Length: 340
Image (cartoon, rainbow, N blue to C red; front, top):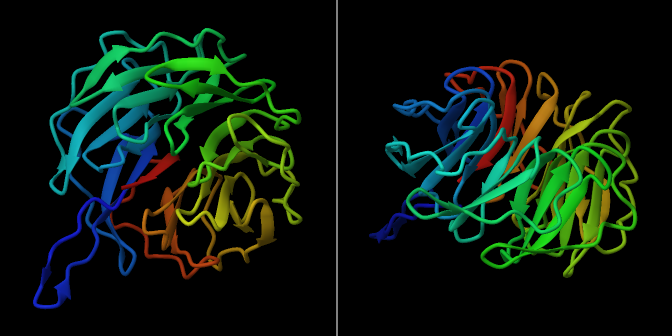
C-alpha cells in the first residue's frame, strides 16, 4: 500500500512513498529499498538487527505498510518486524505455536492475521496479528490435499486460497476470524504444481502460477470457483514453469514470472485474458520466481534466480524501459517480491 502521503504546502504535493521488498536465498534473506516510479531503486535499507533464520521464500508488507513478514527455510520459519520510513524495527517474538516449515505467507486485508503455506500437514497456518503474532487459528476442518505454497486472502478478507503440490493444485476456504468450510474444487484444475496463487484486486477472479502448460490458470470467483477462463491465446514457451502471478491494482493486466526467456509475460485482462503485451526489451536474467506490481500500478518487479536478482520496469499497458539495477543487489536466487 502507498503508505505515506505528505501534506500540501503552497501548492506543492510531496511524492507518494513506496517500498520494494525482495525475499532471497542469501543473507540477509530479506532486502528492502525505497521505491520511486520516477527513479527506481533507492539506497538499500539497513538489515534488521535480528535476521530471519534462512532462505527468504516469501516476503510481505501489511496493507498499512507498518509491518513486514519474511518467510524462511529454517526454524522458526517466519520473522516479522515493525516497518517505517526508517526501515526495520525490533523483531517481534516468534509465534508461540511454531510452524513445521513454510513456503510463502501474507497478511489479510486489515493486517489482523497472517497465513503461511507449508510442505507438511496441515499445509496452511494462520495466526492472529497485532503488534506481533497472536494465537494460532485452528486448522481447517478439511485440510488441503498436499504441500502448501502461497496462502493469500481475497481483497474482502472472507476467503483464503492456497497453492498446492498435487491435484487439485488450488484450494480455498471461507474465512471469518478463522477457517470456514472448504470450497469445492474447480471443475477444471490447474495442470501442475501451483507455486503461487493470487486474487484479482476486485476479488472477482483467482489464479494460479504452476508447472506444465499453460502455466497460468484463472477462474471467476463468487463464493467459489467458477468455470475456468480460456487460456491466453499466446502462452509462454514450453518449459516455462511459473513461479508467480499478479494482477495490477486496476485489474486491467495480469503478469506471470516463469522459467524460460523472457522470464516474464503479461496480458491485458478484462474478465479473461486479452492480448499478450510485447516482451520487455531487456529481460530478467534468469528464472522468474516472484512478481508484483507497485501499489501505484506504475511499476512491476520480478525476483529471479541470477544477478541482479530483482528486475523492475515501468508499466502502463506494457513494459517500459528497464530501471537501473539496485546499487546493492540481494543474495541470489530471488524468490519473492512485495511492494508497500
